[in-house]
Length: 129
Image 1: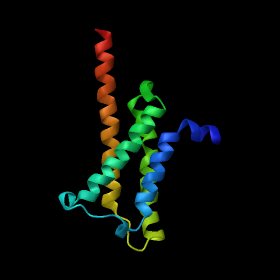
Image 2: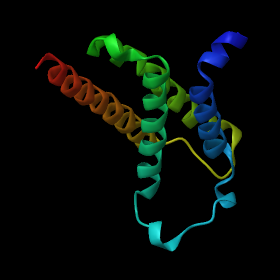
Image 3: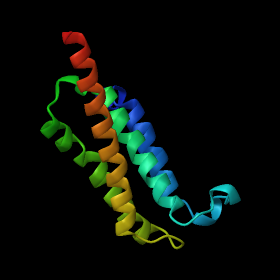
């Protein structure tokens, strides 16, 4: 167990940060008027799960994975994000679960997967030349 945590220290750290941000009272976050626009929370969700998926990819050196395996690995942050939404409705008073938040999480995960795929394809084709 210790070895697994050590190998995934950055993924675990980001997951813990996401857990704190998901389960903390919404009153504990100051609103910045510059970023106060409808749907800003969806952008934050997408960015958090983009970061989580990207770190998972980098930590596991998923360079040789096919896209199908990459999508399978992407279920980890998707399930985690869904559990965080359920946790919000169970463990918090000021928060509730939202299907749109889960979709925003999925968007961030997919952007990470497709960014990595494009990066991998571009670097692989430049090596072959």
